[in-house]
Image (tube, rainbow, N blue to C red; front, side, top):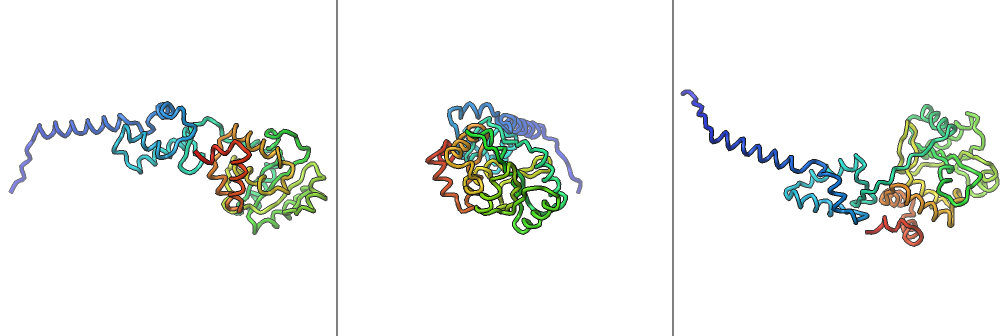
Amino acid sequence: MPVIFVYCPIFVIYRVHLIAILCNKIAAVPKDFSIEQLKKRFAHHPHITREELLGFYRSVEPDLRESTFAGRIHSLKEKSQLKPIRRGVYTFSTKPQFRPQIEPKLREIALKLNKAFPVARRCVWSTQWLNEWMIHQPGRFLLLVEVEAAATESVFYFLKDEKYKNVYLNPDENLLERYVYEESESIIVKPLVTKAPLEKEQRIATPTLEKILVDIFVDRTLFSAFQGSELVHIFNTLYSTYALNSTKMTAYAKRRAKDQELIDFMTKNTLLSGLLSK
């Protein structure tokens, strides 16, 4: 029996009309929903919670799915239009991310380690980076080479073989006072805490600001020049200058068994208390 197709103009018109309505609805709410509208809505909110953002989106798009909303948050973060300061809390702050200036000697060490230890997780940094955030300028600096625990001795002997001077492997207080603090510059090889927050710039892994702050707080003997009022000044200056993520800080501090101690210090002594509660 032959199949008969019947042309129905009413059905076609209805279908075209329905598609037009759907297209207009989608077009009416752009994917990022205008960052300026979001900023205007939350102009007087230094911090915005995930729930507040979701409520704002759903006020104009009631049927917004959770997965779609998560995608939009991710997109805004990728474009640096929305910055996380702790889990589920964001800011539209325009504070820049910290980008360290890696001095030639530190760069040379990092690139040599890349070649000699391609698998080992590691990072390098210098206490000279802290100078601009301090009240008093120290005349002695440490070049930190942090590497996963199993590779610390190998890296130490590698640097010695490469003829670098004043290289020390995880020095104790006695060694620090007798030798390290007597030199204008020393290289310290120490274990890298697992899951420490790092970032990579031009093939060189460096610690995030959050890691640096936690380390100078926890390792008080190694970083003795940065304690007391200097420590408070460094925390406050960095908070005022750069975007910081308190969740990243406390998570790393927890891995170092100092999270509550750090929270107490920041709450009682620094401007960062605003990052810890809303």
